[in-house]
Image (cartoon, rainbow, N blue to C red):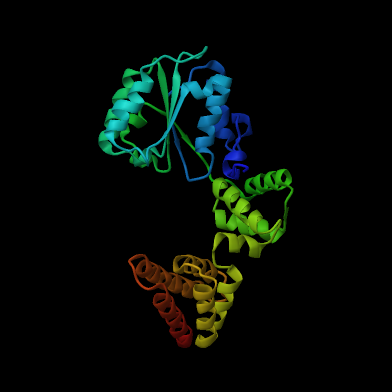
Length: 320
């Protein structure tokens, strides 16, 4: 049996020079690698923008074939307590590196999930073992990292990736895997991924398992997300005063397509801005949508809350 390979890992760049559109970060990191003098680093930015990839690419560039022996990669969201810092990371940090580079690397992913006590212990470990180990802390929110750690690190902020960058990544996978994808399929991938390349790769792989010719419908089916056209038609019906037709379309999405209420309300929020109504009216509808999204997140019935939201839209259109 052939082992299933996740495309997000398969197409992860192995070298810093191949990381997609983070040159403001990679140029500085390449200079550090060239000098073989890497400081403690803090990588911050939204998900799927290349933070972990940059850390692993540094390891490849720095150690070559011996990178696995010199790198400890751990995820703080799984191991977030103080014992992990005191034992696992401390034991690794006190040992000398293998090869020409005089220190090893600890790549600590999702470091913002560490408890404050664990971060204090990490601060001491970073101080005591600087000669033998350098740390790369990766997080989405740098504000959750305590100041003593931030002051010991060079901070790198990763930008969100543009649509053009995501299209290049999609084209690369499509060519390698010999797939066909339509322009609306590419647009759907980019819309659903929200700048996260990991999600782009995983969605593309899920879509390819359904059909080799990937279209917008295939992408939304693979993602189990509401199609923009379906939600757009539902909102047009309700704004025209046809509650029965809008309710039928809602039931089709919830009960027949099996979509989650949270996903439908997210798409409703997006489609409000495309309605042909004044801007102040859009603001009022967004406010109502936010209220019902909160109700659903607090445990309210998705069907009842969405029908109630449609009723609010209908009452609003009647007033106008």
